[in-house]
Length: 226
Image 1: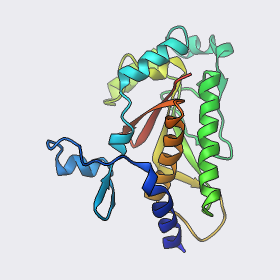
Image 2 (image 1 turned 180 degrees about the vertical axis):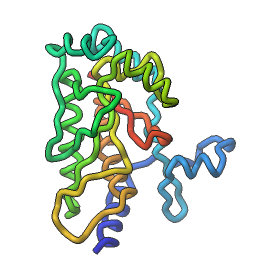
Image 3 (image 1 turned 90 degrees about the horizontal axis):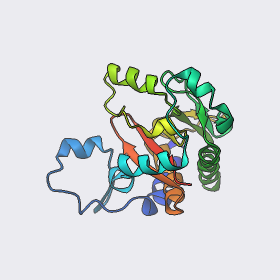
Image 4 (image 1 turned 90 degrees about the vertical axis):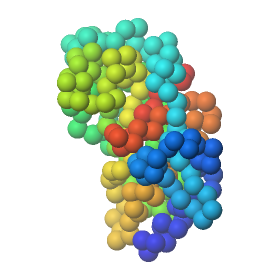
């Protein structure tokens, strides 16, 4: 039954999920392509990196425009902005991870978008007769203090001008999932990643989110656009 679920995920989701990588730069090494976690089909190669490549500059522009008026300096400053934010909590479709360098708050439109992604995710699983899983939210609102601590730890994606400081942005892990359905059957993480990628692509096509594939951090970096 495990292979039954894998085939459903690949056949139904795979054909519409990724743009062809045939136009990628010839300078891209074999190691880089492997790290990109390519999904391979007979005669075709598809890349998350190509499809989800909304750059930091693009995401930061919209985050600073529609998000909090200024980045919170520390946790106390973030607490003073709570009236502009909505708390996110573990629910039927996602798990809020143990957050060490962020706090579980988003602006209302970002919270609605996270819930929309969760609903789309659940719908794809149910529509294809797949077990229900929850994905993990691994980073949410960061303070300037959180950014400094991340930079000291060597996190390569912790830029000073971070979208996470405006309450518009969240990260979703793509290699960890929580199984809810109590069955012996299970799906491999790579196939659940396909499902999550399809849910994100659907929202991206509607113009609701920007998405950056961050392979070193094993997450999708998402900023709401409105």
